[in-house]
Length: 155
Image (cartoon, rainbow, N blue to C red):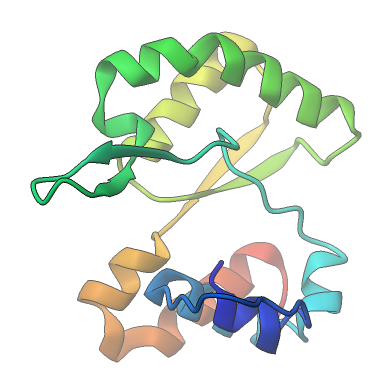
């Protein structure tokens, strides 16, 4: 998420810096349409395949985001940890008959591979990544919000 949504949607004050993430903008449209943060997070458990964020040094010498699935060495290096992480998440009692994957490309392919190895989840439901929606399908925001709501049963 970003600092805007932390404050406006979650009531968490953030001091010292401001961030705006288009992906977060879309995601919190879904959260609000599902009845707000309390209603949404009361029935949807949101977590990442890997709980860590990664960066690399970009062309300007500053850190930039690095998706684990865009670096084969990184992906291979984190896979044993991700196995343990997903098993620990499942052990908390989360629902496993159906999970949602935010992303329909490499993120989905990796989750499907992990699931084939570990057999943790019944059905993996792919949803378009919020960044994709905001960057390429902005005129269809309502459609994608509805698609998320239909998938999670929030309509």
